[in-house]
Length: 363
Image 1: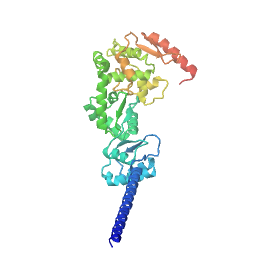
Image 2 (image 1 turned 120 degrees about the vertical axis):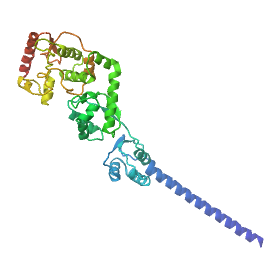
Image 3 (image 1 turned 30 degrees about the vertical axis):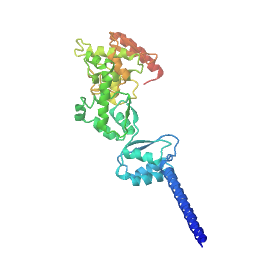
């Protein structure tokens, strides 16, 4: 009688073990499935691009517009994973502006973590050597989050410029055309503070500030003269020579010019007319009543006529000392100039250049 009981017990034990194995196998399969799906939707590459792409989240974005931007760069499972995680992480309440890099191998988890924590990728911003504040504002508006209108309003605010030590005409002298690593969503005040810091660092280098003091000129005045020289020639090797000539005019005095000789710089006339395509400056153009007309008003104009190049600034600081008061473009159109000490010599140089222009039909 005892043997059948033992067999029954054994069968129950075997059956129980078998059920446990099935249960564990089922759990294992479920766990593997969950892990696999989690990896697939949240950690596998979400970008459908082979190269790094960038998400720009601005002040007007909400969760729906972010989803649209995500959809434009991600594959299907990446969109699903991002949406699921965004809901669980309350991303709609933690949207931060910025420029975010999405690497080819990044999953939705890492991308969302960067967006939620504001882990941005900076831009390399190169200040351009543009001719007007409007063009500078337009450039900055395309490269940064703030609109060009915000930038131009800032640059045209006389009280703000005065706080920085400039006028609305001289404020372009603040900008040094280097490349800066900066965040795309940097606000205008922080951006200008950065430019002030970079400006001060630039002028402390290579003894520039000391040289300006020895010349009894401000950094804005140096930049203003440099901007004129930049427009006179693209030949960096000749710029120190031209700088010396204009400095001679500023300091020259006689009965006719007791306060210095007018610069009579053609580029300033173009700026006064806001016509930068002019190739010849005729006498009728010299009558414009503008403080930038250096044929009419002696001394430097009230501010730069472009963002001065570093080569132009250094040309003024390291100008060539000579006695020339006049220059005229060479008749061979080499981009260089003939220099003269007297007006008579200058007239002869100008005659040759005018004849060359007429032969080429340049008006």
